[in-house]
Image (spheres, each protein chain N blue to C red):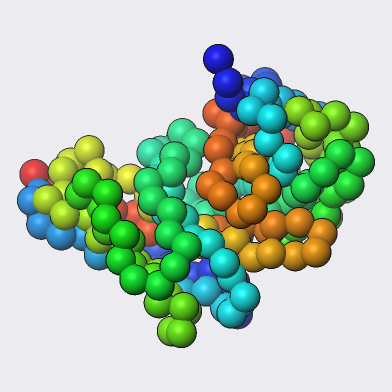
Amino acid sequence: DGGITQSPKYLFRKEGQNVTLSCEQNLNHDAMYWYRQDPGQGLRLIYYSQIVNDFQKGDIAEGYSVSREKKESFPLTVTSAQKNPTAFYLCASRNEGGTEAFFGQGTRLTVV
Amino acid sequence: QKEVEQNSGPLSVPEGAIASLNCTYSDRVSQSFFWYRQYSGKSPELIMSIYSNGDKEDGRFTAQLNKASQYVSLLIRDSQPSDSATYLCAVNIWRAAGNKLTFGGGTRVLVKP
């Protein structure tokens, strides 16, 4: 069953802690993306990666970090430098050539 | 100026009517365009993709692209209560470092029975 898996579905973080959100895809897609969504808002691009061991900052990269060591995996770390991390985080993947992106089920992060 | 802009709505439409959604983008080298539907608390799902000027129809949905004017629109015919959702416009911009896929803020649509 091909798809994109994000885990965990819900995550709680204490202030000052780093947390890592997982994103795995078995679609053999080259490109992967991380977005943040706040209530009533659209998706804002955090980081994206076209190939292994390479990634680019999106529009709101401050306070986040990523790695792309394997084609199928693109984990996102929310660091303590991110002052307002409570949000819905979405991972997506797509083939080269600008075709449509497919999304995981999302991770809802809450700072407690 | 935002790269992709949409009217946030809500757009209230009677059941059976046509819902018309608009999206404008700022980068003239944008290549491909997508409409996604998102129900509350869920991830976006693709409705339509469009790559060249003109209209593209798929069932009750029609996407229209005008690159000269830098806008893309979505028409939903015979609107149903199940169409009530947020509709996200996405624009792909090619960069040497990779394709950047940028979303608008979304338009909330309410279909009233």
